[in-house]
Image 1 (cartoon, rainbow, N blue to C red):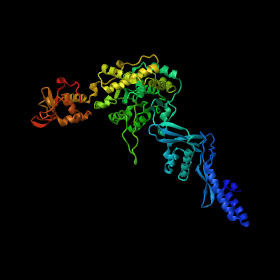
Image 2 (image 1 turned 120 degrees about the vertical axis):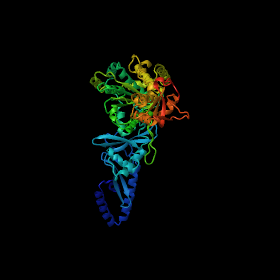
Image 3 (image 1 turned 180 degrees about the horizontal axis):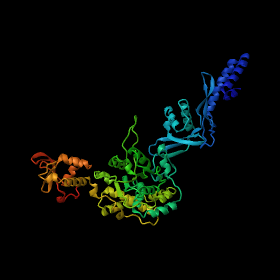
Image 4 (image 1 turned 120 degrees about the horizontal axis):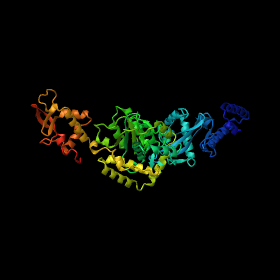
Length: 587
């Protein structure tokens, strides 16, 4: 009798039955005994429900069947029976109106933070979300999962938290435990996502990136078509920069930018898609993105890609932004530290290459040497790809295979990678009049192309140091000091009458004194600023190179007269008489 009462789901039916029995018990003078026995049976029933080891989830087509303890988990949702002492009743409380259960525990390999995968059934299909365990352990945070389709609100949040916690605790030996990462690329000797034992637990907004690193169509078809395209040196360089991205960490190199620029219709965008088809889906919005984004968004994406290349099309869409600042930010390989209201957030980092296209250079005449050093900038004077439509059709159907072979080949050469790179690096420095950072980026590209010619394009002749040396920026062009001096001399030449013409009645900038020129300091600062340079940044280096002549007191400024008016002037050596301008001076 007591078992029947407690198992009744309809509270009204149960109440009517209890009233009938109480009437009979009262006539038999056993009412108190009946109520005591009913109370004891309810407590025992609730206890048995909570300790049952055979109480399993009964969801149709669920990913896994687990022990749910005191909970009744079936296609109608999740509920439990609770004994209420005050009302002396067994009540049904619902944690969820839809099937839901934890299916996997993930431990991040870098941070050690545990995440949990929650599967739920809605709109005729099983879906899932991955989140920190703290999010499903807190009543206030778990409500936020309603945004992703989980039926949770302020009424059932507490019960749902308890249900998930109970299931996780009761099934520690049943739930799969896996290692996870929030970014792609190297993790020891493994490469994510090619190592399927390592899961991706990154933010949902970057899941499309992870899913874009995949394989489709025919490897042979892709290889056949791209092998023909690689006869174009510009496309070859784009692909080499893409391959080189996964070498940056291996050789402890620095992130770099490969920027291909030129007029419209040259096939730059299609070339970028070909370079990204090495790794996965090269469609726009997948692995190729427009540059119409903020710097913060770009760095967040780079942190998820980590070792894989970042491909940005049409640099001019961020016109008005400071390219110099952007380039320095992304090639530093680390984002600035950020704080939320209560803690210091993890600093984002990346070690990869950046492939850009555009209609104009990304460096300007006033760009700092550090910016120019980090960019391999190539003008597109000939079409990169002749038949763009055909190529797009082929590479959007066949992609992603070459990356697997290339990564495997890199792993097999772990012991020789650094020595091979160093040899190429030295050869480029001997061949080209360039800086070490420029040579570093080009050496990575040459090494990457060499590996690709053995692992992907078997038998193809690899790029050599001599072939890429012409794409290196010269030391003179990198040196902002010399560029600032040349800019100043050109402005002086344009305005020569403001120095030498005694009859000139307009603005006077200074005077010519033999092999030297004296220019008003305020005017020089203004000229340099207009050209993107800063006088204070170049004055000491000018003095070291004997371009700027110090006063007898060792100052950068000479107090002298020009047309009988005393002022502050900077004394510069005329370029045609300067023998030391191209000499190497350490500073």
